[in-house]
Image (cartoon, rainbow, N blue to C red; front, side, top):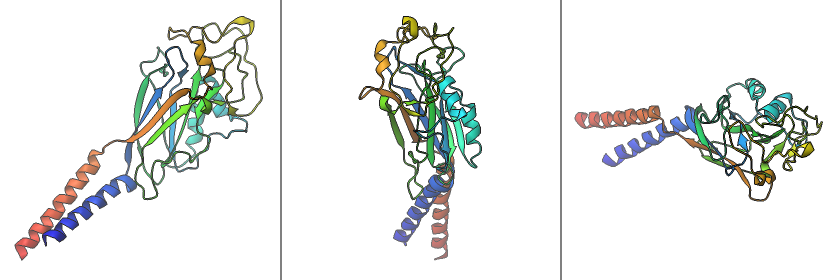
Length: 276
């Protein structure tokens, strides 16, 4: 009898834990780190979306949508957010760095920040992300494969993600020439119009200098630091740009369900002993 009750308790516990991870909402923490060294590039607040695998924000080799263009050129995620809203059951938001300079909660080199999201395996099992590198004309990071990052296994159990974005993963939207003029967040790069590129999304080849000898690198930013020349060649082998970690946060509700389940089994076993 003791052995069977113990097995029953273990079965109930396992069932409740499975319920909390597969059928009910799972709270996850998305942590973003800018891995550039001091004097490197900054990142706009990172847009993240959890979906069923059907949201494809962009594809390499094709023209960028108006939404992706706005994000890659100005860090404006509103268009991407509107596109994402067309997906039923999707969960989205942004991870920002509150310590960024006033009016722009961007990720400066070395900064880390995180945000919490409630997702489910059935409808929010895949992660997409997008962020602009600044100050650039149209460089951004993100995943062009909608199903590249799965948060749950085939049984509905959560699996953590640790995404390392290297320089070779940086995308060029192909919408604006990489000459520095009209680059957001760069003092001295204004006064000249942007130049449309009319190309397609592809792997970024690194950054150039401004016409007339004004370099992007060595230019000052509103954050008060100067961008180092070494940051220009972020496409170099092994250059680390960002890290995105997604981990599960313990759910008090799930723990409460487990405790109630155990008390239920214990009450049942006590009742059986009294009736024996």
